[in-house]
Length: 579
Image (cartoon, rainbow, N blue to C red; front, side):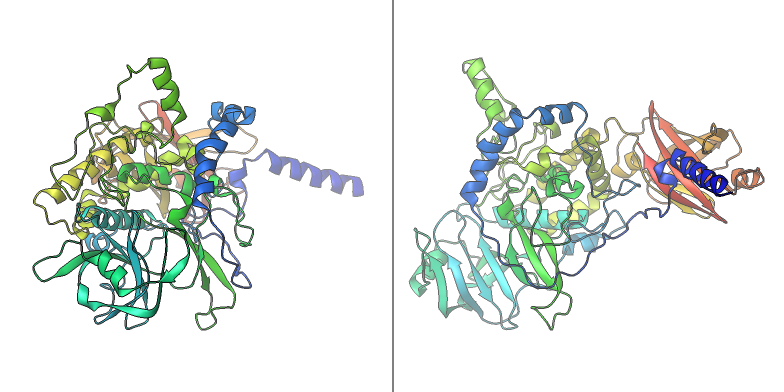
């Protein structure tokens, strides 16, 4: 008897092992949240070195990658899969990334406001508590009458609105995509509102802290452009609530964060950031332009348990801007020290030409060089190599493109209007350039994949999003579908088939040739497949109650995707998506 029991258990285990992993419970949800536990106390601040990071990314790591056999093998196999992805192909919400426009339709007003909760510093005096009066990116830190700390940055005197507008626009669009960014405003402030705190400090040319004097502050403000009312244009960025720890690294783990279990270069949210950076031409994606903030669970106990939230910072190098003025033509086309270009130039003996050599600045001083004609997504480069970007796979890029497709032209217009350009035509130029760069990025990101996303169900109706329609790309043909009973240890059985023709961006009509009937959708790019009659017949089949899984295969122009579903009572539960 004991032998028979053990044999039965063994056969049960073997049978379970024959089933695909997606049939096992628990099943992922579309936008689940990454499980975390509070850290007991505030971690120590992290020492950083910009120079070490530059040398590591420009010289040490490229040589190491070139000499690594594992790197070449991994690249030939398509790269390593990201580890912050669920079975439905989505990145769960976390302190790294929060699904916003992927989760719901966002309004134009939300695109205009972004993460902002206020209109800027409180009315009244602004006490300057520290400042940087020399160097490329001058600015200072102030505290308003409500005790809120704000970081102020200034446009280069010769390029009014250039970097402040770019930073506001990029922050709004990255926030919509799902990244954590700080509250940012481009506002006009009367210079008389700035009052120097007696304890204010700055640094000299050797990095030593010295008192910030009224003369030094005046020297910083005097060359700036003012309007007729004597106001100066500044970018104000609110310090996030919590304890500022310093930048995070795009590679490795944080030893002080018990919740940091996925190497940063294997997070899809960081890998695919290159898609949004290329779209916005945000070429400065170094560690220094990130920020970790410890957020206590109980705000009344700032030294108590909490979690670390990860922010992106400093988008002043987006669009056609840098902190010192307009971008040079090769920005976005080459690393600052690019081994590829060096080797190519050596072999070409000076005869090599590039696309950017013919670029000209826009007619707008507040925009600089920002164009879409020469832009090619696969050739885009930040100023410094980014280790997370280098790990990006085609699947990571597709995911980012699926998010970008949901950012509509009206959202882009609203975000650009928040940048407050005053030059006639500047707003239109930036909007049109962003739209064309978006189109190119979507075409590149979707190449090789069937452009469907986010399978979900309403009762017995399967719903998918047609990303081509959502992104405004031309229709490449009908969607065809097949419905199969996905039987464990037995051949699948086809139950129904049909086609879906997306006739307009927001309407879909269905031509059914099988048991399944399909209704048109009234939401942008949404396609619905009603499986009621198919499931009614299937539930009468012997063995279906013990193996209640179906697969819906969608195809278009030789590209396919499979959606696996579990039948639970009167509802369908999407549990996996294979591309």
